[in-house]
Amino acid sequence: MRHGLLRHRLAPATGTATASELAERILLALVADDPAADLVWLDSGVGARTGRSFLSADGERVVLDADAPVLPQLRATLATMRGADRASAPEPAPAPAAPAAPAPPLGLVGWFGYELRDETMGMPAPATPPAHRASWLAVDRGLVIDHAAESLELVALDADGEGWSGELEVWRQRMVALVDDARRASAPPVSDPPPRAARWRHDDAHYAELVRRCQEAIREGEAYQLCLTSGATVDDPGDAIELYRRVRRASPAHHGALLRIGAATLVSASPETFLRVELDAGGGLRARTRPIKGTRPRGSDLAADAALVAELEASEKERAENLMIVDLMRNDLSRVSELGSVVVTGLLEVESYAQVHQLVSTVEGRLRAGLDALDAVAACFPAGSMTGAPKRRAIELLASWEGAPRGVYSGAFGYLAADGAADLAMVIRSILIADGVATLGAGGGITALSDPEAEVAEMRLKARSLERALGVRDEADAPPEFPVGPQ
Image 1 (cartoon, rainbow, N blue to C red):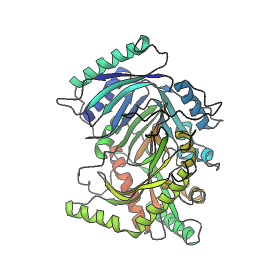
Image 2: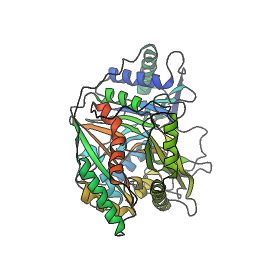
Image 3: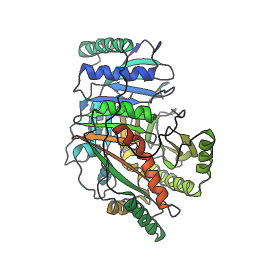
Image 4: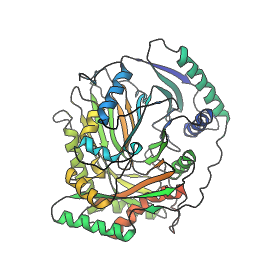
């Protein structure tokens, strides 16, 4: 990156507030300082003891031409931010030594909707509102919180080489004062939402019938697995920031997010990594994906919870589902990775969250010289865990049955850094608020071994905590609280 990186270390989180608690206070202070500002909070979650969070209220909206491909426009913006022009003349990515600590997520922050598949796969996709297709901010400054060290640091791109001076110095002083005020403040109690109703695209009987259609297609050899989804809308969802405060408490996740870009806000408690791209020790870029396939609810007590973990680990259906997506992601990553570099570094591992246990695998590859995170997105999007296999036919079949575009759900959100790194999560366990309506989605992988009624129950389970945060109630008892992880 030609632009330098400025850092200003603040006092660590101490006393009555952990770094996680202080992050929420700072977010509320940013909102109070400018209620209309675009907002970025990439959140490692309530009680996080590892990972980093990032906050900014100083991004500039990326104006995307709706008639032009999205990825080249984002590449051009990143090139401008790093002082290069790869957009017009592709050149090998720089290969500096891997930094001792991860670089901050300065660059682009936002999301891709699922229908961007028309660009990445060359497949027809229904039109969606602009906010449901892609929304991004160019972010050149913000606050990084390291949860392991309980440290806080202001970071900024030094575009003109003048260091902390002029407008950047004004911003630094403002942020120092704002953080100091947040340390002394206390966050107001989280409010309970009023009762609201959700309108699901499919009732339970219809969704079960769609599961059977998926199984028929699998038996006929058209697919191995299909990730069937449904969606719901809730009118007048209330304040998005208060909604996220409820979501992050109900479902702590290492890919939590509150992203407000223009008139649309995405709140997420996603547990799934779509793509993470980092500099490796050799100066190249290494891409990692962590597909989730396989779900069980939390148990009513520790013994029941352990039994559900054992059941998930032993499930032939869940293991087969996960392995098929691992193979698909290996294939996708191999399109942009060095020959022989794609490896499975974690297979069929159980991770436990507040609401569910999940079966997770990890696939990694070293990107070929000259390629970067956007090339990896183009090769892998949409994620195989949200389509099924084979990917192209799965997308075609699902589009004919689901009855509406998925929108942001099943897409990806996070950051594309100016230095070539990226961290993108799956848009699952997420809500988009736009035009006075909250939209959410849920689904699951269907195989020949699936039980239609069990698939309905799994889909509803995945949506339950989001519905409760919105004020939608059902007859199910609230799940017990458990320590969550990994963070």
